[in-house]
Image (cartoon, rainbow, N blue to C red):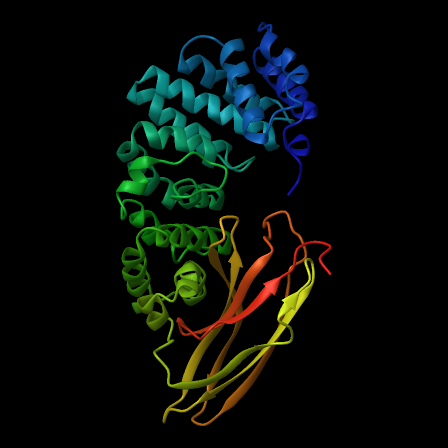
Length: 371
């Protein structure tokens, strides 16, 4: 992930200031010119907010005046693209909401859609969704999902995700579990893989709180699939599969199976901090029919409070004939990474086959520098 300064840094402020000066030559742009001296200690979102507020301070007046300036910059300033678009679309959405007029709201929806190809307007859309969800979704469904521009169609799905990364939450989307499903229905067979990936991620977001809505939606799509539907559904159900959700597993063809499992067997009981543990297992189909298996493994990590929490990792998908057996071997690393903090103490590994966990194999993660 790039550093904040690489995305919204002093160079971004300079480009934004120049573009706005082209569009509003009489504006002094005092706040924008001061921004380079304020931006260094800020996070990425804080930088976007700083520039949003600078735009609103330097371009006073009503929403229509701001929108005119932005349109001129869009059409006449070549450097008006990239990460500087985030604070611009945020300023448009903020002023439209502050004004409270339907015309301003609708125009802001139109204008941020026209800019989304330069940098996704998904973050600005959240402000409009929070202000009037039904009005915004009406435009998204009726206009954006039918757009000829794949960037706008993706914005329809991505900007309305329940758990969009880096973005503020929209409480009404979380409280109304099926409210965004019409968007996904309109886009799940989209010709663009770029759009369909967003639909899959949106579906996966929904599965965190409303698994039955997700399974029912995916089942409808699979009844009349397009070329990419099965792949989309697999990606959209990935969290439910890791959780062993029966409906999701059944929908993907992973019915309860009769198998005999030996393992997991560990190569050591004490694992050095930063080291690896290797495990093996054997799985045999003891049933009378083929068994289609999705095989994962779960590492039960020790938490700071002494409890444990499981994280599921993908192993393989296999189809076993009656009596057929497969052997599995895998190493799991405890090398320090920025996204996980390891706590020395009791850990465990278990397999998960079609959502059913095996008995756990316990081991101890040693403290750093422990003998």
